[in-house]
Length: 318
Image (tube, rainbow, N blue to C red; front, side, top):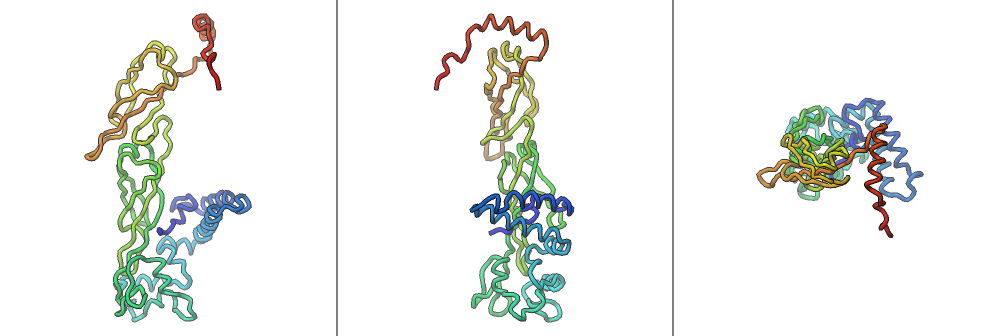
C-alpha cells in the first residue's frame, strides 16, 4: 500500500505556510468530525488522517523530518545523521564508525524498535533467512522503497494537448510528462521518486491528476466538448462561426432553425491523436442566447406571438 502524502491529506502545497495549514485543517476536521458523521467508518479514518497530518505539518521540527525522510523520520528515536551515514555506506552494511541499525533509532534497548516490523512497514521486497528483512550475513537483498501518492493539478489545455509540468519533490525539481487526453483521476507513475530505501532503490511517485474546470470546454469520455453561444437570429437563419480548437481555429456551419441544446460534431478536432489512437471529436453544444432587454425586443416579441400562436407544451404528459 502506498504511503499517503500528508500535504495531499490537507490539500495544501508543500510550500504552504503555517496559516494555510491551520486553515485547511480546521475545514477538514469539521467536515470529517465523528459528531457530523456518526457511524461513518470512512469519515472516521479521514478524520484520523487529517489530525495526523496536522500534528506533523504544524510542528516545524516534525515537518522538516517528514520532508526529508517521510514517515520513517517521525519514528521514535530516529537519528537523521546515522541514517545518512548508513546510506552513504551503501545501506547494506553498517554506518561509519561501526554502529548498526540501532544507531539510526537511538538504540534498541527496551524494545523501542522492532526492526522486522519497521522494515516490513516501510520497505518492500523479499526477506532474508529467519524472517528477517536482511540476509543471514547481515547484507540482505536490497529493499525497494514504498510508493508515494500525491496529486497534480493541471489546466484543461494541458490535459487535452499533453505536455510537461515541473514539480518539487523533497526539494528536487522533477519534470512530469502529462499524456494528451489526461482526465480527472488519471494516475501517473514516476519511477524512483517515491520513498527512499536504505541500500535499495526508492519507490515510485504515483500522481493522481486533477483538471481545473474551463469556462467553455470539458472532456467527456474520449471527446472534447464545448459550449457555443449563438444569437437567436443566428440560430434561426443559420450561420458560420469560427471557434477555437486544440488544432487551431475552424469554421463551424450552424444549420438554419437550430434549437437550443442541439449538438454538432467536428470530427477529429477534439483531443489530438497519437501513434496508437486517432484524434477524437469536438462536440459543440449550442446555447441560444436570450434576447436583450430593450424596447425593440418587446416589439419583436409581439410580432413573434402572432406567428407562434400555439403553445409547444400542449402534448406534455406524465
